[in-house]
Structures are given as structure tokens and as C-alpha cells.
Image (cartoon, rainbow, N blue to C red; front, side, top):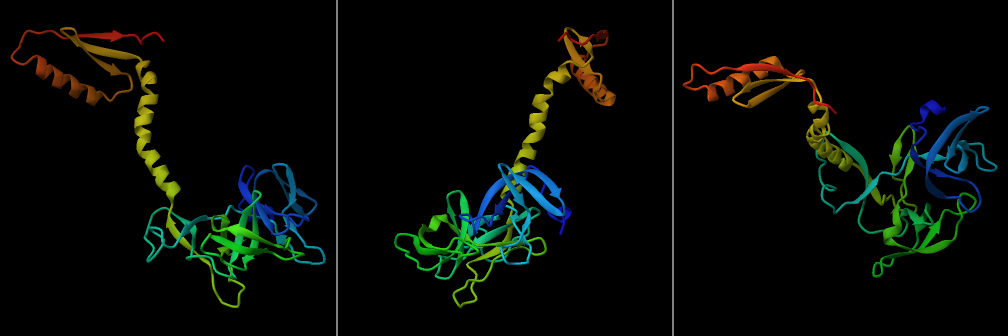
Amino acid sequence: MSQIDLPFEVGDTIEARSFELGFRGAWFRCKITKIFNKGRALFYDLENTHNKVYQKRQGESENILMVRPIRPRQSHENEEGCGGEEEEEEEEEEVVVVRGLWKVGDLVDWWKDDCYWSGTVLEVNEEDETAKYIELVPEPYGEGKSYDAMFKDLVPSLEWSLEDGWIVPFSKDGEKRQCAKLMKLPNEGAEETREEEKQRPTKKKAETHKEVSRRPRSCVEYHGIRVYRSCCDDLEEQIVRIEWIKGMLLLNSDNSTWIYEDYPPPSS
């Protein structure tokens, strides 16, 4: 697998992990500042961190990808638009939808110390919304140990690969259960973009008003009333305007005079 295969560029914000002691089993967010090859290995400079994109755990031969995209937006199955049949939309995004409350055995990521720590739910206390004894990935692949965690700080564990994209792994409690599902839902960001596009013509008109006022202009004058014409205006449109004004002002008048004068562009 080469740099060309990966969908990341300098400036992208991604998630990365490390096999360094104290950070095993954690995903942290960072920005790519440089992409380069050293020998046959691909490296990313991640802000203040120098990271080899493919690494091997000690004593193993398998190359493991150490970076992935930012995890999908999270929703809940009882929220509007997250249950039943999926609606057809022009703009959709992949969303991870949580199924109900957490259960023992669910694979979760715990947001702590600016990282997502992967682990398993060992005990749930619904009264105070804590998932007691979150066990982190055991050594040597994680840091191990158990902790108390709040529901609000938990998200479903996800796995990502270039071939399969995002997937939700099955829980490890003996049941073939997934604590979440991936769905295609209307893209909230796309809705905002469409709203911006609706406003764009108005904004553009306001921004270019000064430019229009500086164009070379001429006018037709009648009794002190001037109809200005920009050099870029459509001729037929100006003729229609003049004829309409002429018809309004010269109704029942046969001896009125029109004077055409050229006007230089106004000084800036």
C-alpha cells in the first residue's frame, strides 16, 4: 500500500494512534503538516509528532495502519431521521447511530485526556449514567486497567480500512451484538452549504455595487430625468427601458425633445 492509496493530504485533520508506552490503544486527532517517504516507508508529520504511517508491533510481522479519517458524526436511533426507512437525499453522509443504552460487553471508545481510548463495558449503572469499569484494551496492545466513565463520554468503537471503510465490530460478551449501526443520513453540512448558496446572489450584488458604479456610463435625459446605461448592459434591455419611460412621459405630447449625452466615468 502506498501514499497514493491513502485519501489524506497535507492540511487534513485525521486520527492517529501510537504503540508508544502510555498511549497504546488510544486514537488522537491531529493535522498533517508534511507527507514524505524515508527509504520505502511512508511518514506523516502530525503537527508536533513524527509518525510512521505503517508500523509493526514488537514481535509481530503484520503492518498496521496507524492513521484513519475523523470518525463519522454520531446520532441516536430515537432521534428524528435515524429510524425506519432511509430517505433518499441528494446529499448524504455516513453516520454512526447508537442502539439504545450501553450494555455489558459493548466495545466503546472513551473520550479522556484529549484521546479516544478503546475498551469494553464491564458494568453499567443506569441511575447515575455511568458505565462502571470500562476496561481498556489489555497489554501489550493497550494500556489495560479499568476506570469509571460517564455515558456522555462514550462512543462506539469503530474500525476503518481503505478497502472496507468504516465498520462496527461485534461485542465480545459472547453475543453477536453491535452497539451501533452505520447509516446514510441527510448531510447537515450540505444543508448549510445550500442555504449559503441561496444567499450568494444577494451578497454578490452588494459586493459588486461599487464596481458597477465605476463603469463608463451614458444617459438619456428628458426634463431633468436621466436613464443611465452601463457600457456592459444589454442594448435591447436599454431600448425597452427608454421606450417605456418615453411612453409614460410623452403621452399626448408631440413636440418634446430628447437629448442624448455621454458622461465620463465618475472619479473614484
